[in-house]
Image (cartoon, rainbow over all chains, first blue to last red; front, side, top):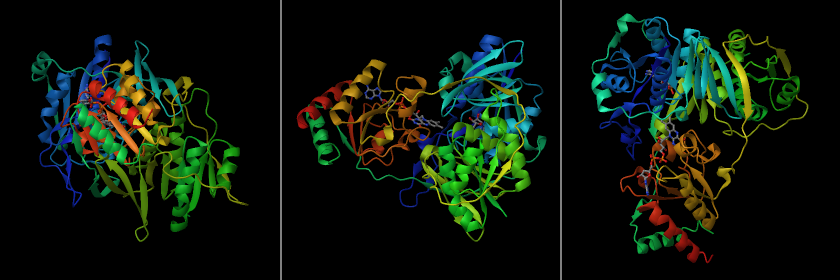
Length: 257
Length: 318
Ligand SMILES: Cc1cc2nc3c(=O)[nH]c(=O)nc-3n(C[C@H](O)[C@H](O)[C@H](O)COP(=O)(O)OP(=O)(O)OC[C@H]3O[C@@H](n4cnc5c(N)ncnc54)[C@H](O)[C@@H]3O)c2cc1C
Ligand SMILES: Nc1ncnc2c1ncn2[C@@H]1O[C@H](COP(=O)(O)O)[C@@H](O)[C@H]1O
């Protein structure tokens, strides 16, 4: 049976982040969390492979223990088991550190055929963790994939990569890592039944004492400054006279000639 | 002598990176080196500022460009460059991440600009964070200091008279577990949206592909072009990918941006931040686009847009 590992990140919902206009500091007091948008496509792709080939799916994440609720979310989307690499220190990691921890945890899971990652995470969006993880595990890697086909019995996949100047179709030997684009599929919304079943699925709790300590970061963040934008923010209603007023205001701006 | 290295998948982006690396090479007293895939390009890069060219051996038909990763990483291990800049195309980003992993160094992805701390000889590199909600400044604590730089961040380097440089041949790329079966060149079907003075942008609030006609008509009346959000191009494929705006799409600076059924999430707003005037139509009063807009109409686009078309037509005497 095909063994699929899917890596997902639990991120701050960026819609909840506010910027303090004077200090340009980010205000993170009242933020919610979610599975990084494109990681849902990675999980969905695993679920599709499961339907087609009877694959087993392990969903892996590196996060602080407070992210525990992410497990149920990932499990309700189709994973059979979650692997939770957690420690209070595992916040604001650089991509090399995240990838090193993922590599160590994945090695502990035994054999696998395919690792799926999102194209990039919603918060950092470095698009690095996937390719670095492939290097750390010494396996081939295919990035920016929007179509994936497993060739049964041949230990390979055929992937369509969307690149700058062309679409490239490649054959990748398994075990391998693939990063998926959002247009590869449309993630399902979990049903109530799936949500309930998720609570009963197994979770591998991996604390740092079971892994080597995280590597040196390689990058140091010296500042984070929120972007601000000066806008008028004038709202009009949708009645005929409001629309006329809006058109008048726009014409006055002198940008339409 | 330490080196400033640049790698890009094509000539155009290599020249941009040569320009980016030139002043750094001066400030750090380092040589500027570029990777090239042919001796003809090698000569050209030397004429455009490279002191040294690392000549890549040709790939077999079925080898992807990423096969160069071990060759590039080995060269960096022996030559120990100080800075390594790579063009942030999809291939460039994969290559950069894998080379950084092999060299155990840090990589700043999608670096939008950098400044040299001359005392520490360290680059302070800027990149967007949280979809563009903030700018993160990073320094690389290992060597080489690596960054991927989006295409067209820098102007291309210009040609100089009588330049000399050395060419060093690199060994062929080993075969990998990835084999190319087919390549289909992308056809550019769309207008260059970054040139448009007025951009009418459609989002998922538009229910059917045919309804994009509404936006097209408004664009025609205003003398603008039609753009879209990422899901319209990449998930629904209703408009070409070259016209979606945002952090992973095109960044535009039109005089007027009109958003129709766009929620205004930060990844999209990042691409339109520099518009002179932002105007949005959305039926949800609390849609974030209104925070980013100068003018907004709260209402159903199917009712509002036809009226806008009529109003503009009569105001502009069409
Ligand atoms: C790493 C990353 C990178 C991304 N990069 C980009 C990018 O470069 N560009 C980009 O665009 N997105 C990008 N996104 C996606 C982005 O987060 C949003 O999901 C996307 O911009 C939403 O597109 P939308 O506004 O068209 O759709 P939606 O968010 O679905 O919004 C539709 C809006 O239409 C309104 N509406 C619905 N019906 C009507 C009606 N009849 N009349 C009026 N209004 C109506 C709704 O109120 C809603 O606000 C990225 C996301 C991630 C995680
Ligand atoms: N903390 C994490 N835990 C698990 N997977 C991650 C984590 N961070 C990143 N990833 C994976 O790596 C991909 C790219 O992330 P990034 O390099 O941050 O853009 C994501 O889409 C995930 O699949």
